[in-house]
Amino acid sequence: MEPFRPIVDLKVWQLWRNEEHDVTPETKRALVRTLYDDMQSETGATPVTVCVQKLATSIAQVYLGQRDKPDLPLPGLPLALASSLQDD
Image (cartoon, rainbow, N blue to C red; front, side, top):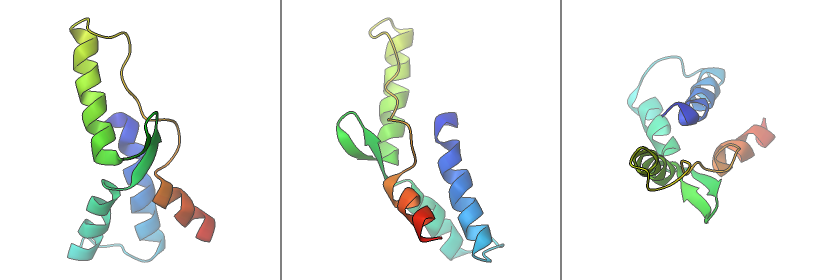
């Protein structure tokens, strides 16, 4: 999960910046929606949840000797978060 932590950290920072300082049903929904933001991957735009699943599976395959390296998404932020930074 650590490769995906900056995504959640950025979303929390955005909520804080928008005066959302408490954990409410709306802030929880905003954080959960982050899991469905698209990231760039080798196969195109892919939801964060799918990237996490691919990474977990590929790490297991590395340990089993079935592949050489884990399947990480391409560097960068999810597309929705990146575009929201341009609006600020």
